Length: 145
Picture 1 (cartoon, rainbow, N blue to C red):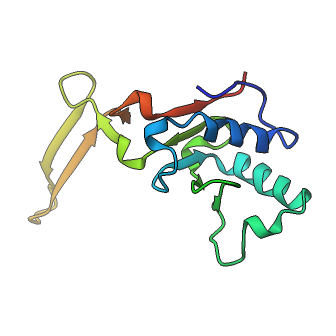
Picture 2 (picture 1 turned 120 degrees about the vertical axis):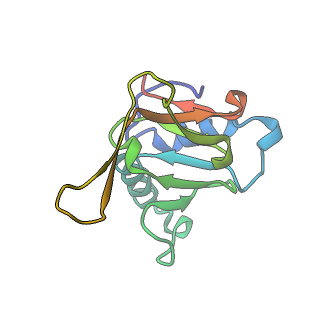
């Protein structure tokens, strides 16, 4: 866990540097490590770079929503799943995968044929899903204090 504080324009660069310094030694320098945050937090970060006259840190060739973290090989990626949560996660994307509860908890699976005389069938699946972590020690997590 990175040092907890309140993410804002004043300290966002410091928080990102703290996250980078907490990346495990085995992953240090690996450009495959990504830093994920919501779009509002990303906007605060790039606006702070611009305010601090660090335009050379990001260029017009990059798509909005990703920028290289300063003084590191790590790409910061904005994702909608973290919007306005002030939660930031640094990890290898291969360390995180999607899981679901398809073992008789709350899932519902229905396969049915339409009654309109056609050969069409429908499939209705309702389940809970979430993100699973393969190696928790290789995740750096930040949340507001």
